[in-house]
Image 1 (spheres, rainbow, N blue to C red):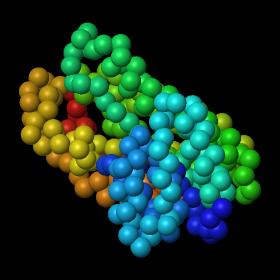
Image 2 (image 1 turned 135 degrees about the vertical axis):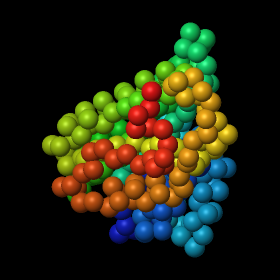
Image 3 (image 1 turned 180 degrees about the vertical axis):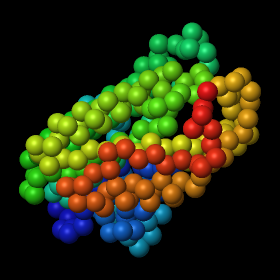
Image 4 (image 1 turned 45 degrees about the vertical axis):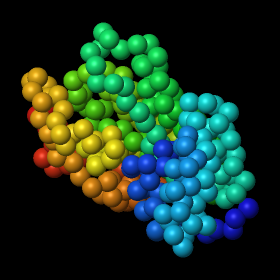
Length: 253
């Protein structure tokens, strides 16, 4: 077991985008970070980006849709670090932006499996470990979306799962109280990741037009997650919206 006085964080989807930047931000502040995701090579690349702090990163390839894989993630974390203080449920995907009636069952199910079932499975294992460790407790941060409030056109699977994540956040926040487990949600709008590249050239708006949208530096999201993670367990950011200032969210539709 690594002997570390730092807090221990698990980040799903840690190989790219928000997960990558948040992992590096936490490592930079002294956290030991477990990098979880499907593609080992991207997780290894994130660890290498940590530079001299490479030893603070543990790569655990994980499929959040697979209960056995998720159990292994938490077992490996406990084996190496002895506990988990922070879970950032960040892994997520979207379906093609096509008409609702043209979506296949498999397209629907793949989004539900990653965005909702994956969050539930990781939250469940976090509860099991956090309530049994000493000192007891920890913090779960869910990556929601501005789509948890207002949808984009042709986004039914993504929007439905992000609304559901909000319900899971609220339930976990309530159910975690007795175990000193805090749960909050960060709702992100137009972080400059690979997923948002299309926003720069133009995306369908609620009025039927195609328009480009502003994006924001993903490091701003990482700093927000770092703030949420840094709070004592008697304090919680229940919901936080971090968005590109001029994106069409307020007034969308």
